[in-house]
Amino acid sequence: MQMTTAEKTETKSYSKQTHSFTEDGQTINAIVYGGLDHPNDINGNIHIVDLGEGHEGGRYMLTLENDGWLSDDLKDLEPRLFEWMRTEGYEEDSK
Image (cartoon, rainbow, N blue to C red):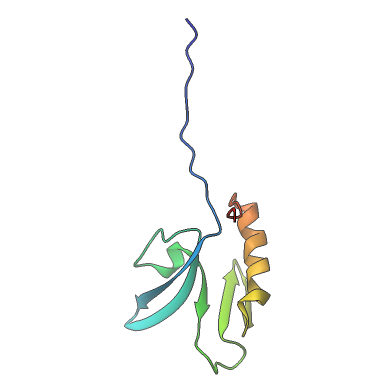
C-alpha cells in the first residue's frame, strides 16, 4: 500500500480593505493588503497609510523596508507594493 500525504497551503492574495488602527492614542487609517493579520498592530500588516487629503507630499504613504514614498494617488504606489508582495509569495486575485 502506498502512503501519500497532503499539505494544506494557504493562498496569499493582493486583496485589500480599509482599517483604522490606534497607536499611541492616535488613529491611523490604512489600506491593508493580503488580509488583516493583526487588527491591533499596523506594522503586523502589509499596508499603505492614508494620511488624509491635503497632506503635504501626498495623501498616501508606502514604506517598504528602509524606503518610503508619498503620493496623492494609490495607482502610483500599488505597483511598487505588488512587486514586493510577489517576491514574498503573494498571488494576484483572480477577477
